[in-house]
Length: 142
Image (cartoon, rainbow, N blue to C red; front, side, top):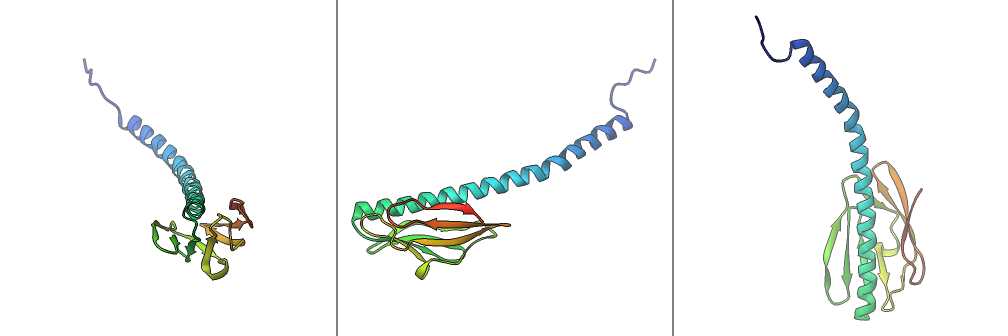
């Protein structure tokens, strides 16, 4: 009697084609998920850096600036450089900078250069709004 165990060629091809179809569906979904996650992390990081700069201005009693360039930004004070510079993710950039390419907090923690500018994030544009006074910055999709 012939009792060989294993899969036939047809069974193997069927399992392989089902696996391929599932991967074909899952890859674009996971790509969109990671793009949204990267976008969320970028805005959270930028917001945290603004809060650090604002708190530093209040605690040191000195103005603190967030210097903005097209592909990165850093925080500086009058007497020393704070220890971080942030590079923007690929295909992200700042557009329409505020005055003198900087956001400044005075010694009371108020934003000296209120206004708004744009951030391009992959295929979307966002407003980055800086209210006057001690209000927090916010982001809105255009």
